Amino acid sequence: MIVYEAKAEATKEQLLKINEVLRTALFVRNSCLRYWLDGHAKTGFDLNKYTKVLSDNPDFPWVSKLNSTARQSSAERVWSAISRFFDNCKKKIPGKKGFPKFRRFQTRLSVEYKQSGWSLSECRQFITFTDKFGVGTMKLMGTRDLNFYQISQIKRVRIVRRVDGLYIQFCIDHDRKEQLQSTGKSLGIDLGLTHFLTDSDGNKVDNPRYLRKSEKALKKAQRRLSSCAKGSKNRAKARNRLGRKHLKVVRQRKDWAAKLAQCVVKSADIVAYEDLKVRNMVKNRHLAKSISDASWSIFTNWLGYFGKVYGRFVVAVPPHNTTINCSNCGHPVHKTLSTRTHVCPACSYTDCRDVNASKNILDRGLELIKNTVGQTEISYASGESDPCSRKVTSKNKSSHRKRKNQQ
Image 1 (cartoon, rainbow, N blue to C red):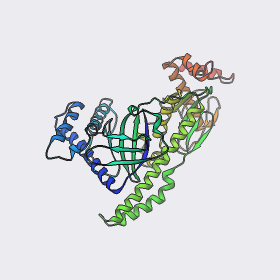
Image 2 (tube, rainbow, N blue to C red; image 1 turned 60 degrees about the vertical axis):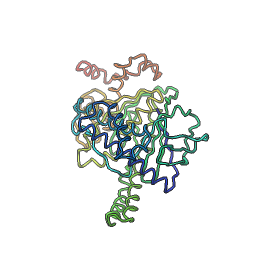
Image 3 (cartoon, helix red, strand yellow; image 1 turned 135 degrees about the vertical axis):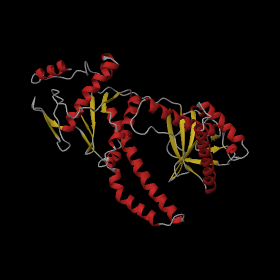
Image 4 (cartoon, helix red, strand yellow; image 1 turned 90 degrees about the vertical axis):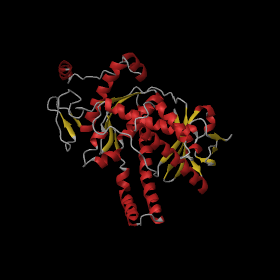
């Protein structure tokens, strides 16, 4: 499944009608959540049936104007949130479990249609919504060409409202697969704040810090918003300007992380990265803003996606003791955050702290892949005779044997 997004040109009348569509979808969602909280729904199918009850209710005549598949999609979103909450409880995830809550009408909202309630023009540059709200036809702006896909492949169509306008998302049933030549390389990646990533080859990528760079402009826009009277038009304009600045930071992070992840996956056959628990790390009030600004989770998600697209091995490694252990002999060397150089007292191995950690991450990643998929598949993918065995020089053979005996 791939998602294409295009900006839509809409008139003021269409914007008002789309706001009604979004409010109706939000009403259906909150009503389904209340129906579940009252104990009337036991499955997702019960919520789907309840959407029909809402549309037939004379007290809510606006619900029947919304397409039936859009109503069902709102109910499915509620059941997805409920299922996720119970799954988090079963897995005993620490902290909040994500109990579903009621939502209010806000700037960023969306409504999802299935395979009815909309139609595309023959040139695929115009979309028409055919429900009873009378939104009509809107022009699609963008570089994505939908002519490569059949109409039957478009399974979902979403209307997404953001501070800078309306966007139409197309969920297309298509498996993206691309073939690349084998590079014969394996990389371990250590994520950090000073340098966004450091690989096992010693290469470093600086942290872009998009939020820090835009912080001055954000504070200025926030002060202007606070100085405006509540309910005034100037306050609405100031809120929109502030939202656009935040949206720009979000898009910068996503674009940069996606491009970097694609370059990393293309450069190696095997990529191992540390599986950081960002949810727990942001509890540190001294580093929370910097950790959130680094967008590690976005980067690792794109790593997994491009790994599937290009057929590479991408594995997440537990980060425990990757910084402490020596990558040469395995001897633990405890360090503070200010210590940036790894010096092993056992084998006299000296290296950058992050490079040492990335080598440990690579070793663990190769072991995990070897135990799960087997040696033959790894050798075929990387083009090496034995990529899971690291070369041991004559200087550290004894220490390497000691490490194996300890394990």
